[in-house]
Length: 186
Image 1 (cartoon, helix red, strand yellow):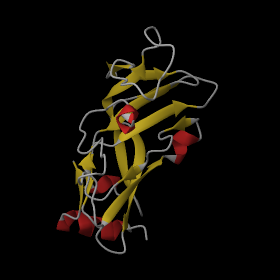
Image 2 (cartoon, rainbow, N blue to C red):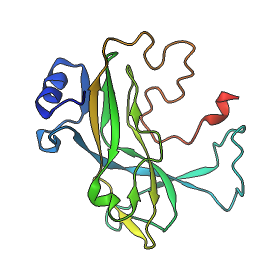
Image 3 (cartoon, rainbow, N blue to C red):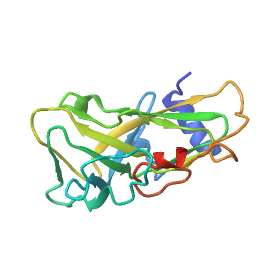
Image 4 (tube, one colour):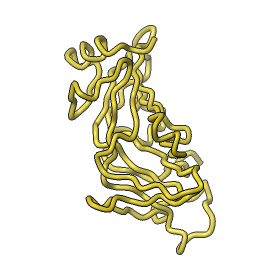
């Protein structure tokens, strides 16, 4: 069951869910608005012509800071990784579900390809997988509302929270945007 605004605020007070910084103005009826951080990762297409999922991709992407005034222009078909400003966390009996904003989706801006899940026991800056599906460039800005997160409660505490031994939790506690670590699965 998705938590209501009242329940979300109570869970923040009790420490079962954390959002830092937190402001009542960003609480929605069943979610919380998240804001775009200034750091993004873009593909370095000058150095690379292929992605091999079995190999580390440390230099596959390069870090760029979004300009305070002019923002960042996402070209049609472009894909970047970014973080939200807020650090979100859940205890062993809650999960978070990252969702897009309808107004941005109506422009063709998608904020997650597939990884929109905050596992029990994790606390981090969520990574956005941003893609421009429109035929026009889209300009994005630091601090803009970019996503929302909804929270759900598990039927009971999970047995092995994210980061537990043997789970291969590659992104536990990340505070800066990270490229794929898929190669660690091989």
